[in-house]
Image (cartoon, rainbow, N blue to C red; front, top):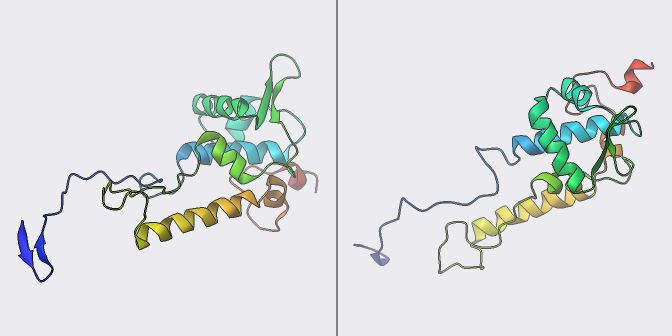
Length: 174
C-alpha cells in the first residue's frame, strides 16, 4: 500500500481478468460472421434450399465449421434442414421477417455489461461511467440489429454484396 494525495492507495491487481463481450479486438466472433454469411446467402436464394456444400463454397466458410453453425441456427429456429433428394438448408421465415439480431443471438448473444467487468465488489451492478457507456453502445448495436431484416440488407443499393463475393441470383439474371 502506498500513500498519495488521495490517501492510502491499494496497488492495482494486474491479475484481474477483464470480461468484455468481444474477443481479440473484434466485437463479433468468427462464428457470428459465418452465421451471418450463411443466412444472408440463404436469404438471397430464398425460399430455395441449398446444400451445406453450396453455402460453404459461396460464403468461403469451412464446411465442417459451417455444419456446426447451421446446427445451432436450426436449433434456434432460424434455419431448417431436410435430408435427401430435394433437401438442403433454408430459412424458417422469410427474409422480411428475420432480423440480424435473431441470427446473432442464435449463435452468440450480444453480451451486455450487467456488472463490473473488472469484478470490483464496490461496483457490483452499478456500472462506472465508462462501462455504462460501453453497455449503452452495445444496446445501440442490439437495437440497430433488431430493426434490420435480411431483406433490408439485400435490398440496400450498393456496389458490394453483403459478406460474399459470389454473384447473387439478382446479378446473374441481369
